[in-house]
Length: 530
Image (tube, rainbow, N blue to C red; front, side, top):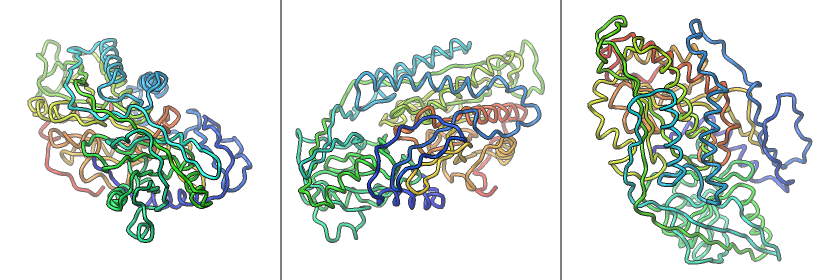
């Protein structure tokens, strides 16, 4: 998946992270929890890590809903968030079962549980043609066990946040290496340091969030490898001690040596051992294996329409239309994956339930709801979204609208000084609309009516799951992305109001699209100005 850099707001983010990285001694980290706007800030020494104060759902600013919204009142934020909790519970079970590599990972029993949950929800709602469509996965990389400790000056520090970068090679048992600090890993950082046979310790500023960082985008891994490093430790620049898996989906190892991500506090502990010249050593072990014979699956459900494609009003007894509205969401996730992508999964179920309550005679077009598999893992051309693109062109030829539900709501977050600061409003989203100017007008006007904040420019090419199928039908999505691919992506980061706001906007867009002839919705590329 392509990483989209929204640079300007991240300059301040990077500055805040750098301040945190260079701060002095700190007290033990406090636990993040839901709070209130009136909670006083703790009086802590400068340089102390202040955990996020995730606000309760009733603390969020709300945008007045437009006239006619009464039709969408069943799309309730608390209800949708309860569905998010059900999906993330599967990830939490994965962790509770003792998996270090945990989440709704493609090919695991937890992905299967997610698919079974989706199919059960589709059947409960009353969708037709519900099916779990299995695929064979190509060989999959799996880290099975790992451990990292740092020692020096007579003390040993466990590095609890160590997490292998996707497709990293493993070690041959436990190795002990001298750590060498090489900053951001630029050519200048390597100029006067030797990392040959040692552990290169790098620092990466998030850009724009957990999905990527500067060490990856600036080629630091290649430089460390070319300089002969025996292992690479990459610190993610979020304040605190965040567990991070920035990559996923590829098949090429990031380097020919082991690469592990570290949280900021753990990385600082290693850096301080280096600074004190206490003969520091890093002991690390990473066991990985390749698993074959695994299965993944998409899940499908259908609500038939009843009108001819050229009808102007519902007529009982009309044969089902051959035109279609398609709504999709990917199902797999690293860690809890509340925003990425339990938010999309829950919104998919909520929209399906909303339209299942509409009398069949009132549905102009058939609605196809489906999940896609192995978004974060290599799946080849005949699984997941690639299979949909390669095999569903007959459906797409009659699809008036395709909606990708991906990361639909997140708390707006900021890095200020030495703290990761949350807020009482929903974050702006990156966005894409593909099709005619008429479709673009409908989508953007509705987003404005529902107060959905957007980046000032759309994506030139959509990221996420839509990137594989955006040319197949008129389509749109919104995506939020600060805390994804980290263990901060929990239920607290997904505001109920944001889920409700986006779900109602999606429904209103669908209803407006259903009043427009399909030929008016299709078109060439839209302009990139609003």
